[in-house]
Length: 411
Image (cartoon, rainbow, N blue to C red; front, side, top):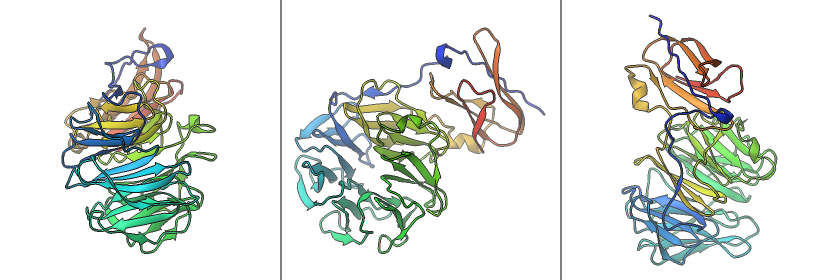
């Protein structure tokens, strides 16, 4: 039996869509006008968070309020909490005009710190900390100028990891297979299949700065280039043998804006966030990006993005504080996708929008779908979908101008 789905959108000035107000970013109390370099969540209790920037901060109420614990701070840095003990914190912080970095450990929740490793050299500081997803007592850290150190006893002792001798910028362990590691260097991206004991270069042979590995598939990797031309995002789906540029919607980055981080939502792997002077978001694996900064105001650069999947919340560390976004994902819930019982049309996102918006819906059975946009006077503006569809979930991207809608993804 044929079904008809017809959706009427009210169109406002600049093609903004009129619906219930979407959540917005908001500034966390106690971080106003403070530089924040990195944020970490204690995995066993997401109410506990730490941040490093101009000072070292702690929140005990899911990031709503923050207190400065110590003067320990960093212009740039990385931060991780031991998964089993919230008092054990690893910090990588940049110091001095040359940008050399120091690895510090706190065993009392950030009250006091002990330096365990220090780096010097001509390369930019490799400020990363990676905890092995399978063996939580194993930690990898970057130390300038081109070194990686590993501890297998919660940071008590350290051994050097042999890596390609180029400036290293990022280092990521595949969440689904801790034997596979990717490292981003000034000479390209390298891959290890044996926990860093040996390395081979991928087909990405130019300088790369940031990495994000798919939580379920170690062959899917994203890299972000923060400088050069063209800067932006690249993706591999075959473990690094081939790479594809994924810059649709990132034109504003060219020529002036630096990329500072790229993060995957571990529960919605097609959803990624890119930190620049703004936040960009994709819900279709990087095919289309849109700006995601509503409510941020004047924030400076977005230096870090941390995702709390348990509480559906995102934290962004910026040059002027920590911003919080509630309502983590607007993509279709995976449980709904398994056995949808009815036709569901989801709130378009972003709303209002500038360059493009995404309209998502699910089908309970094979159906003929007619998705139409109308203006306030009831006049038809565009038909986005007019066909029989057999999948479950669909996303349509509309840029407010195109004659035909572009289907972003279907399943």
